[in-house]
Length: 363
Ligand SMILES: [Zn+2]
Ligand SMILES: [Zn+2]
Image (tube, rainbow, N blue to C red):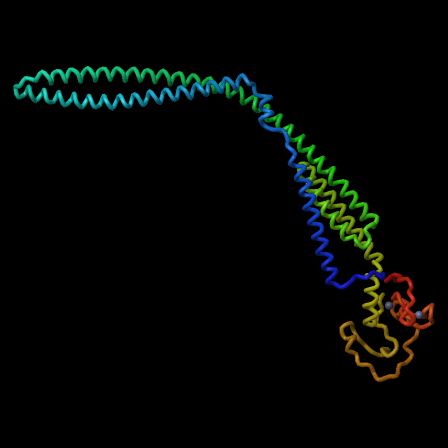
């Protein structure tokens, strides 16, 4: 009742700093949880090493190397072939020219010279030998390509086998990861739940007293981080039940609190209601005007109560015991300490300042 609330600016600052305090605590917890989360788990290579047969991998690697070599050979042969074809086409041109020359000579009735005959024979023989080399190279390329196809087929078969083994490895890896994540979640909860329990304990026992904003701030931060961890570790299917149960509990608790507030309001709220009613000269219980003393024959509402002009009447017997004529509640009574007239529903006597317990009046 006598709690000093302090100026509103300080109350606002308390709220702001409480929020800041919760945010900082949340941040700290976040770091701790992240550090726990960075503990290394199972590695894909390790699991695959266990599941993939090293023989098959060796075979595949050697086939890969062979295929690479073959490809190199094939492209070298192709290059040779293309160079050869260049020279062949040059011989072909020379040959055509020589033949043209011979033809025109014979038309003119001139015999072809010895040198020309020789050049022609040489060109023909070179051209033919080039053709033969070209054929050999083509055969070679064909053979190499055939080999490569065989190797690729082998490799495909091995890859198929490896794929089956890899599937097993992936299943195992997934299982390991799941259990690793569960272990991390357990560690995180092992950190958070004791903290949450401490915060709840302090709050439930009201140990924090006037420092309860600190406990509330820390408690909320821990609670949010904990629920995030739970959300991460448990599949959403379970999480929605946990979340809904918590929400139902919270809403139910709030509802109970509201109902209790209405049934038996908190003293501070009750006092405020009584104070405001006395201030406007209305019965705090039923809102009927308190017509006593100089107000005996007046009419007012809560809006006009301050504008009433009183008839110039001597201070008359307003100081009397008074009960509400509408509901019968005692509104002014004799003080038990000093015998003066005091408000029945306010805590302190206006004459001597003695306090009496505030009782809720049934309305
Ligand atoms: Zn009344
Ligand atoms: Zn008194």
